[in-house]
Image (tube, rainbow, N blue to C red; front, side, top):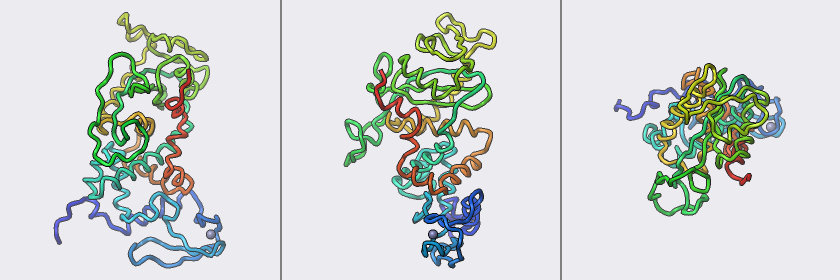
Length: 334
Ligand SMILES: [Zn+2]
C-alpha cells in the first residue's frame, strides 16, 4: 500500500457515515426534509457513497438521504474531509492551511469555512450576559483581502496585492478601515465580542443593550463613552492614573480576552472589515464552548450544519447579517 499523504485517508467511510447519521437524527425524528412526513421506507444505498442510507418518502413520493438539505449535501468530497475540516477550523487553522492539510482547492476550503463559521454562529445569536460584566475596546486594522478596490464582492481578476493595511494615525473608524471591537466578559464565564463602527456613546450604549442584561454590574476603564453608559451599575478604573484594579473593580478579564483575540485574528492575515463580524463571532463561539475540546466543538458545528433550517441560512450567510451587532457595524448610528 502506498503511504497516504493525508491523515483523513485513515478514516473509515463507514464509521464517518454512521457518525454523521447519528448526529443528524439524534435530536430530531427521522422524517422527510421536504414534507416532514414520517411515513418512510428504506430505499437502498449509493454504490459510489458506501454507508449513505437512502429513504423513500410516502408523503411526497420522493427519495432523500442522510445528507439531503444539509450543508454537506451534494458535496463531491467524502465525509472524512468535512469532519477533519471542521476539526481544524476549531483549532483556528486558516482556510488555506485546511486546503493544504486536506488536499482540496483553496476555494473549496474557503467556502466550507464560510459555511461552517455561519453554522457555528447559530449558537451565539441570542447570547446576553448576566452577572458582573467587564468591558474593553480595541481597534482592528482591516485589510483588503477578498475585496474589490472599493469594497464589495466584485471579482478582482487577479490575486489581491495587499493583505493587511497600514494603519492610519489617530482613532479608528469603520470608514478608515479600522473598525472597533468591544469585548464583554461575564465573570461567570460567557463572553460577547462585537465588531462595531466606532466608539461613540450611541454605539457603545446600543452594543451594551444587546450584549448585557439591564441592571447588571459593569466594570470598564475610564473612557468617557463608557462613563456615559446608562442602565447599569457602573464602576471604572482610571488607567491614565495607573490604576488597574481597585479591589473587585477591574477589567483584566476583558484585556486578557483581547490578548487571545489578537493572535487568533492574526492567523487569517488581514481580515477585511466586512468579514470581521463573522470571525469575531466565531471566536466568541470558541470562547463560550472553551470547556469542550476541539472535536466536541466541531461536533456542535456539524450538528448545526446537519439541520436543514440552519444549513439553508448558513449558505446564505444569514447568521452574519442577522448577528445583532452587524448593524452596529454597517449603518451609521450617529
Ligand atoms: Zn416527503
